[in-house]
Every structure is written in structure tokens, then in C-alpha cells.
Image (cartoon, rainbow over all chains, first blue to last red):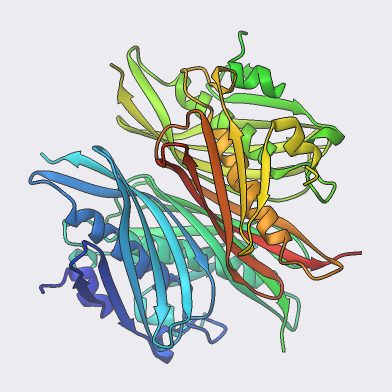
Length: 124
Length: 124
Length: 124
Length: 124
């Protein structure tokens, strides 16, 4: 799969699952840590946003475009090592899509949960 | 100012303002774009999270630590070029801090707004 | 001003301010308390939602309708006595409006803050 | 079950489920409508907040108290008739609980989804 420039820059791997959901993963190490020695929460937010946004994108008809309107993230546990976020559509309306996503560590611990709203528009 | 590993990796610049707020900035270009040719929304989320988290961190007493509990972001307009997020404390309780942040472009357009909740704990 | 059925039922008073914002107020007493003897947080959420929704509604052109997509609320301090929420538009696009609101007590303490997203659609 | 003053005032019925989750229900009619003839979204927010808050409360040890820190609601479809919200704990830490809830109509359509964060504190 060809990666977007942003995912290539971040080292994010992308997997489109058969049920329409999207899984993004990122291998973190010490270079991802914040001032207090934990993996910066912004990386989980980046993955969750990206997984939901791409899942919204997979639902588009030809000529439609989508953009994030809002995103809410709960931080459940510290990220460490490889983390992966899986995003899926909860409800797809004609002009709006509602999504949710979960971010987990390799040991199965949930790092964060998110939900968000995407607008769907005819492209130009 | 010494940057955290995460901010160094991301190319984020950090400015601690005199009123206790924190401003983070990031110069985006084509390598920050998503599949549809816009700057990936996750970068604004990263800046907003980081600006609020560092503002929370500046309020800590010796021995205290802080961690993000929740974050909500509104996406108002597309990011482009240099973007900067300013985070400030809305209310600081003994065990919880409430923060808000705004992310703007160089032309003054607001890209995103956020609020979030941080827990404050005695360190170990 | 004529109240909506919901606001009449809840005892909510409505004030349309000159700058386009909306202020809703509610006098709480012991009958608004939850299981632990505090005013139920749902009343602040109700006021914040209503103040933002009505402010969105005041921005509509003839024939347009609006509906809430998403709402995020921070609870800063316990509600008590009379509380009032003021909602205003942060950005009004063609198909989406972003709003924010603050809920205060009579003594000026902020009880809660919210932001939300409303969809704007041509009516039928 | 004895109702809290707030739930009695609102006409909310409460059901504590065996798995620790909580279901609140409310029968709406025309007196619950907003200015545009739909059930006011604040009622779903009230139910979601209450269902999650009570589920958090059911997890308390003797002497502990809980309070809402933050709440995010997605509005998926119009409420009508009887609506019921079911709240459950996603993760319970020592000082924080993360919850989620779904609000449905009698015909099974999901009206709204929410997640939120509750603080857990030793009581006085």
C-alpha cells in the first residue's frame, strides 16, 4: 500500500481491513517520549485520528471528500513499544460520518479510545 | 530551551510564555499531507495536546506529575504552512487541571480549538 | 419570549443577547440533586447544549435547519443555586457551525465549559 | 429502587444491571421538544451522563466519592418516544474511571453515544 506523506514521515504503517475498518501502527522508542519520559500522548491521538479519517475515506463515493470536524480522546494507559489504532464507522449519514477507534499496545492493554465526527461533501 | 525527544523528532518548537501558557509551533510542508493533499489533522492534535500538557506541567509543585485524561479537538479550518498552538490552564484543582488551547496559522486563521483534562498526582 | 416546550418543562429561561449569543438560566434546588447530594451534572449539560443550539439557530438563513452533531463538556465546579449558560458561535461555515459555551453560578464560579459542532442544512 | 431527586423530577427510570452497567430510561413526548419540533438533545445528554455517573458510583468502595470531569456526546439520530441510555465502565483506575454509554430508541436506532471521565476520591 502506498503511504500518505504524513504517514511515511511518521513511520506509520497502514492496513485496510476487510470489514471497512482501518488499522494504523507505529513502533515507538525513546525518541517518542515527552518531558517526563512517557510516550507523548499526541502519537496515540495522531494514530486514532488517522485510523478514523481513513475509515471515513473508504466509505466515500466517487467525487466525495471528507474532513474531520471533531475528535475526542480518552487516555486509558501509557503507550509503550508498538501501538496500533483501529478505526471504524459507527454511523454513516449522507453528509456526516460518526467514527470510533481504539489504540492498543502489543500486550493488549488499551492505551486510548476515541470518537469523532467527519463531514462528507461533494468534491469540486 | 531543551526539547523533549518527541518534540525534537517532530520538529516542534517550544515557547514558555510569561503568563504560564505554552506555545508550540511546527512548520508544515508537503511531507505533512494526508491522502487527500491536506495537512494531516493529527499534527494539530499533537500540538494542541503538547501545548496543554506542558502548560499543565508548568503548574506542578515539586514531586507532582501530570498525565492527560481526555482531549477534545474541533477542526475549524485547514492547516497549512507554519501552525502554532497556545495552551493555557482554565482551572487548576488539587488533583485535576482543565486546559484549553487554540491552533492558528501564520495568517491568523484558527485551525483548531481544544480542551482537555489532566490528572495531577504526587510522584513516586 | 416564547419558550420551547422543553425549556418550559425544565424551567429554563432564555435570553437572546445582542451580539448573537444566547443565555439560558435555571434555578436549581434540592429537587435537582443526584444520589450524592450535588446538583446533577446533566442540568449543566442541558443548558450548555441548549445555549449553543439556540445560538446556532439564530445564525440560520430562511429555510435552513440545524442539529447537534457533537458536544464536549468539562465540569469545573459543583453547580448550586441559579446557574446560567452562555453560548456563542466560534466559526460559522456554510454547512457546519462550531460553538462554545460557559456555565456559571450566581457567585461567578464557572461550573462547566463546553464546545460543540452543529450541522447546517437546507430545510425541506 | 429509590430514585434521586433529579431523576424523579425528570421522570427518569433507573435499572442497575447485573454486569455493573446502568440503564436509565425516559418517555419523551411533545413537551420535550425544542424550538424546531425535535426532542431536545439535552435529554439524551442528561441520560448518558446519569447512566455513566451511576455506573461509576456502583464501583465505589465505602467512603469513596465520584464526580464527572468530562463528557463527550455524539448525536447520531433524532430521539423520539421512549429513549434509554446504558452506561458502563471501560477502565477503572484508583483515582479515575473511564466510561462509555449508548442511548437508543425503542425501535433500536442509536440516538447518541458518549464517553466520559470520572474522578474517584476518598470522601470526607
